[in-house]
Amino acid sequence: NSLGNGIEDQLLKNLVMLQTGHLQVTPQPAETSGGAPIYWRAVPPALLEFLGSHPDQLAFHGRLESAVMIHARGQTITRAFLSGLEPVKESPFLDSLLPVREGRPFSALTAGDLVLSEEYARRLKVLPGETVTVTVHTPSSGTRMMDLVLSGIFKKASPWQDFIMFASLSSVQELLEAPGQFSFLKVMVKDPGRIDRVKTEVQEVIRQNRLSWGVKDFRETGGFSLGIIQANHFSILLMDTLLLAVTAIGISLLVLLSLQLRLPELRVLSLLGTSPGWIRVMVLQEALLLGLIFGSAGALLGLGLSAYFHSQGITVQSLPLSYLLGTNQLIPTIRPTGIARVMLLIFGLCVLSALIPIWSIQRYGLKKRRRYA
Image (cartoon, rainbow, N blue to C red; front, side, top):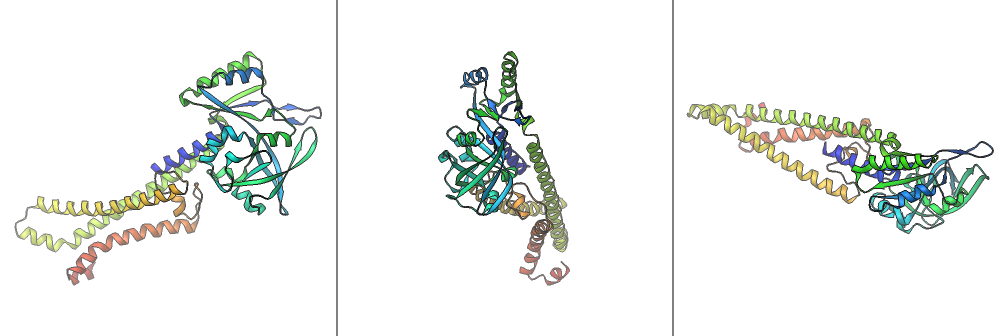
């Protein structure tokens, strides 16, 4: 459960901070003379005035996004997603939540630079410093092309970030012939408890000035991603429950086996006059000792692995089962080999638990009972 909460918190923070914001203020699509829709517009002064007059309550960042085609080294990706952002304003979020594996960080992003996901870089076979050609179809001028220099390759923090790339806002505005225009404003509310109140105030500004803009909170704009997060949490909770159930069965069998193997000794103790109450206390002490030993070993193993994954940028509260399932993604990919790996791990732990009393019997030379066990 702590693992599910940890991953859910991380993915949700990543979604809100990097993509949707707490609130997203978006223009209504307009049409050119030819009937083609335009999804970006200049921000009305009244809206800018309201958002800029509350620096102690909120911050906002402009984004310009479009589907594009990218080409490099003879490789082409026909549909990619380009997001233009303001590096100075957003680099504190980007540098901490979306680490750059190769090249310069987001804080060093300048006009003419491009940051690709590992997936896009792998498919294009490009390295930092090389040129990537971006092609887009604009409603006003038709097809436009721009050469951008790959400045970095980022390591995704969420599954949906495989298919996104970033450039400076000025470069994307030049590519789309949209100076001073945005696809949406990403609004970050400093007190998350005031999200609904700020949303209502923005709606009132839009209504009073009759603006062709709308506002949605992250629950509305990030519905698909939130569905993935909830499904991931639920699947991990199910696997966690399975592991706990199997562990409980293994511990119960271990105690029963130990009790069965010690029946002759318990009979001797009973004949010597030991009360049944003391015998029960001794059995419980042994069970508690075994639980303490394996619980301590499991805690140390879990802490060590959690520290290792934390050093790799995975800030969760427990061991990600996705690694046991044979994938390097935060969302576990269920494969037969991964399931077999987890089952073998559980089987190995149960066998190890059962071997301890057998080893104790062997140590004291009780051969008959060892053969029976």
